[in-house]
Length: 337
Image (spheres, rainbow, N blue to C red):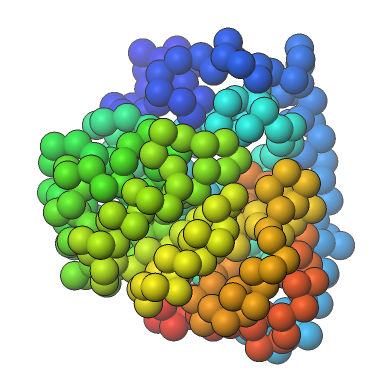
């Protein structure tokens, strides 16, 4: 792609800040690997999988699922993200990560509806300044033409962040995404303090990728987030990926702050258990926080079927009420859907 013709603020690299990540450590799987991955994932059948998801919902008596961690973003940006995964960029931990749902935007939304997901998000994020406002404009348009999407917005520590966050809130944003790992910023940066205060006052949840998985960043981990919460204790923070691999530290934050929640994105699955397992000793704490755990999946950027995330939650054996709360009721209450 000729980067001279990208929209203002669109990244010049797959997901990292402006360089070709194929040249970094943990480079591409080999010549043609991305093309092979695209062929494999496009051929993935979902008919049987939809039936599996329907069985899961029916057995719990759920009207549907609410997934707080799904990715929709401008197509050219999303394709760069997929290229980054294909190349095993450093932030993927060098893992083989075939994108299962590599489809067009309308097909992806239709597939979530086929799975019975009655509300979902458009998680998107900048990795550099002067990108967030443009992404927010795209997300507002996506929400207008996608009624079952919870209008999502994002932010970055830069001059003017409070202004465009306020604009997004006034435009109807219902959830924000902050990606500390990809953005490589301290969430406690002074530039972000007015924005956090605004979002806390507006009671708008923020899904934050702040754990150090699948690869650590300069500002990942619980300590920077604890500093944000010390100044903004009412901030409705949703810790993405259960905070992996610092699961117990982030459970502790949720235990100390009633406004903190966690999403299940990729946690407990065979894929993640293979390199960042959830400690079994923490299951009672997870059960006790059942009213503040939310279903997240990372769709479409999954290396396994969507139904596997649900089976992974089911086999924790924390009971049907815990599953109903996590997969629907907690998010329905939080977002009023």
